[in-house]
Length: 327
Image (tube, rainbow, N blue to C red; front, side, top):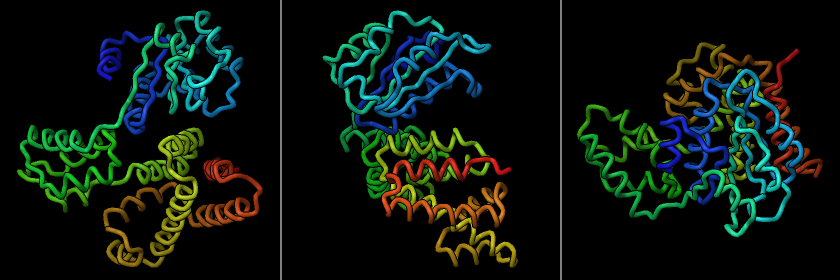
């Protein structure tokens, strides 16, 4: 990981990066850091993402051999391809690609005896992200809090670790939020942690709602793929997505009747801060659109139960439908 950070700092990149292992949140963070460093300022024209077991190798090769569009770099992100756990034809292309093409591979399963693994390890950089032990996370949390001039209670430490799922990357994100929230304090309690720390999946679903509201279909689908990569059950993602649409609809209705935030929070069983977050999202929605979204979600649920399509395909179709600009 330090090597990747050094590459980002110096701007001296390898053409191939393989990120793999159990520490899935941290893998996504480093994928995004590399993405921002290699193609900064949202250069979407030169960033292409492939995901799944059925990626067309020839299509990837053709794209990699195409010069970037008004840029020095083209970035190709390939996720969950399975190429590093079984034999495939991609190895023969590696030596042919121009220096302007960069690859970031994100994989769950890797066999170090695999031919492609050996080629990428030789021509680029491979990094395994392993989950830390609970004791290591405790030391990390206590140490970072101490450096910031704060002491943290044991029950607060345990709460962070339990909700982080023993993820180093998630712990780091929660600590950043927590230390900002407790600026000026000398101690951190369980109440502080409960007030500010949230689940990674819920954060991404909120971000997905924002992307849908902004009609940014690519961003919405990318966030969905991240949730799948984080091994979040599809039915849980769908439930939370439809639940959030339903909450937005209820808040929209209550706004029309002049209901205040405290009353909204009480009615919905949410904290006032969460209600304000939903109110911020409402700027991209009106009642009719939310009603159509809720109906579409229920139709997809019925289609899945009847076997019309799988849960994963059904939810992706729903997200694409939600984020499609209305004519």
